[in-house]
Image 1 (tube, rainbow, N blue to C red):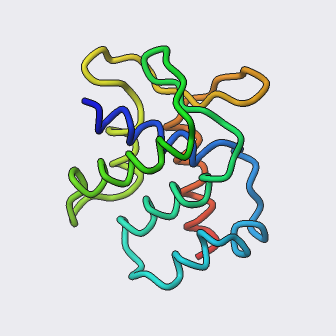
Image 2 (cartoon, one colour; image 1 turned 30 degrees about the horizontal axis):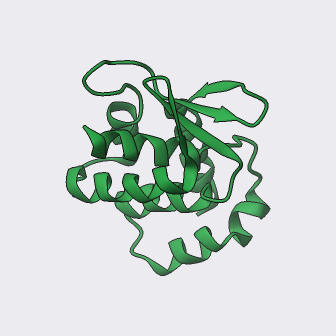
Length: 134
């Protein structure tokens, strides 16, 4: 359960802004690392975590706020343990980045102004931007 919490936190953190443009995406350190890796679904998930690592957001998991950097670190471990080669990134996000375990609460990204947005929605938006750019 801690692993999923951390993963979700990381994923939420990564999808913080939801306002990425293609040029900033391509000049980011996360994108430079992404293009060096094999082009597969796992690389896309790793990219998402790396891209949003520097955003000023928190992951709200079961009512608790987690620092984005901490959440990203935990999320990578969760992905390593739970991702299989046949998984598609978008489908995987829909399953693993939406509700907490075992309580079933929606996982949110919490912005500095206090607004909450569904982590899953933001991550999927960013995934689509990556796929359009790459």
